[in-house]
Image (cartoon, rainbow, N blue to C red; front, side):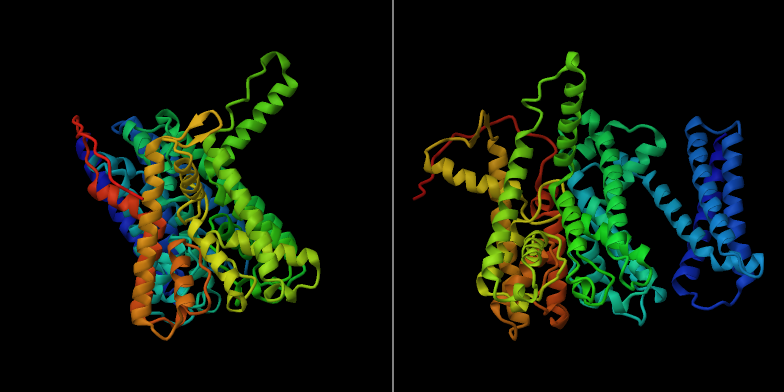
Length: 580
């Protein structure tokens, strides 16, 4: 039995390596129609071997039930990919079966890449058993995805012309950190394949690589280990250990559903425009908006002709940005509240109290978001009425543009106005919004709305000589206040170092331009005053580091490095420090 397992494992690794090498060659390097027959035979042969091999493991009597179950899921995935490829090939049939298969082979190849991504998720349990530090694994997952994305973007078929390692790393980091800053134009420099890579990186970066891998591991293995649940509890901030993996599944399904609905509306909003590959355009911008990425496939972004004054499209993107920026738990909390409301409405005998159903965290996030949204819109409307808003003829257009600029400044980075034309008060307001960012456990960055809210509330609490922050009939935990102030201080320190560094290496730019750029990078926003691609190579590497630290959070990095696995049982005497 053990000999069979060893042989099958070696054979599996050999087939995996063979297929990965072939996919990299054909997708990344092969730009002509040479060796058509050989490519078709190799690709179809490898897929057939994978199916036969999984059938052997599924029906073999010497394999464990867990291996049989995994083979069953592999067979379902492979058969589905092959069936989709056959349907597409039939709909686009050419003069022969060979030419039709070759012309539509990308469907099968991309499906196989997805198959290997799911296979990768099965390795998560091995990682949990070998090493368990939630913060280090969280940070490490971003590094791995960035490096893999850099490698893919360096493939010849990903770009129109070859790009440097620095530009590939900058783009991959910006995509994974859902920032939106670019050292090269994504619309003109990257092919459809390259933009597809960026789309995958935005999705993985927005929801988190570990969220996706844990989702597939849980979904295809029908359960989770204790360490997996404990790990996702730390990553998601969910206090309910038993529901952590179920929450992961709901996050992925909910996010993909919102993005799908958003893509449909974007497709409808651009039906009158001559956009090449409008389906991909709609999917790309829906994911980019929900994940707060701010990337666009159009030259000039949303300032392109037909998009800058398309207010219907702007409202769709704003709704997606708000959903992504609020966070999963806020959305789930409201869904739970609405569900219980209708249950109480139609089933009066099974009424349930809804007094505490909306949590304190939800209230803080929603109120802070609403204040920032309304306040930012009003402030930008009046400060920029005679600058960027004067190009919009209608009052509705002016208010939409002001609101869009206010929302996108909080970690999305879509640009429908030129920020070099902004007034100084408007730029300072945008910088403040970029620093605050979105909400915790969301796809956005910044110090987070709850952090900012606790900082402001703590000021009033101290002024009233209260020991704790009190909201309604609840008291905020002291550890939350301490963490909020730590995040605020360390973010300003990091931004200050970044600004000083850029001014040293690129003194030709003004303080406002550099400060705007660094705040945008740390807040993972992506807005710029047009200096990103003009910065020196050293400054761009500094921005890469700033984007990465802004996405993962320096507190997470320090916690992963400095935190102890066991708590101390002693306590030192308390002593007061004089502060005026």
